[in-house]
Amino acid sequence: MSHGEPRRVAILGSGTGSNARALVEYSRGAAKSFTVELIISTRSDAGIVNVAREFNIPYVILQKNDWVLSLERGIDEAHCDILALAGFMRKLPTSTIEKLSGRVVNIHPALLPKFGGAGMYGIHVHTAVIKAGEHTTGATVHLVTDEYDEGAILGQDSIQILPGDSPESLQERVKRLEHELYPRVVDAFSREMGIRTRHA
Ligand code: GAR
Image (cartoon, rainbow, N blue to C red; front, top):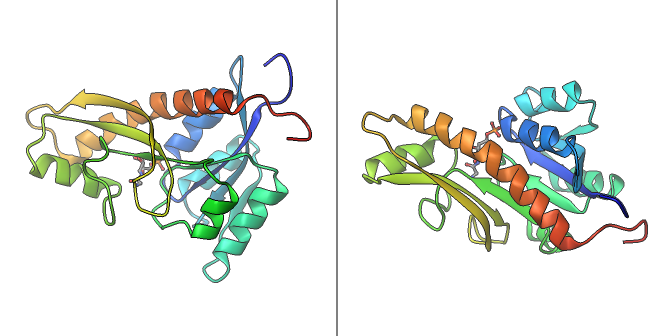
């Protein structure tokens, strides 16, 4: 961006970190509209922590007892504008959602509003999609609200389900889709928010 500063993003997750990696790599390319300033994990042994170390990004490991406090403090101290969930399986408390009003985004491995809600995460989603006999599936980036997977949809991409697909093969192909989709949507979202000034 030629004027102002890129939007500051914190990523929260507990998985392998492949989406976090895709966001970081994208943000370090040309014409960046956002930078990843903080990675937050619910587990010290999660792959997402290795992404933080590899790219030299500050990270926070949330402890069981005061995880909401640590999360909100981390976001405040890093002056983050956007919180991007990437493999976060808990429900965010209302206080955090309100604090970042309209600026929490999530990626979900299905075509919402189908296959969302409590218990629908990771491999469980792909198992349910195959069981339901769907012909297509995909990934959705959406705003986070108080209800699981119910916020406004910011972007979606789909793929065909092939005969013989297993939950694992579907997960692998949907993840590849996610790695393209998520950075593109966060980029557009950051631009729509407008350029950050030092006082924004
Ligand atoms: C991703 O597939 C993401 O869509 C899913 O967790 C995976 C995290 O993978 N999220 C959900 O199911 C949320 N309901 P990653 O750690 O490799 O990015």
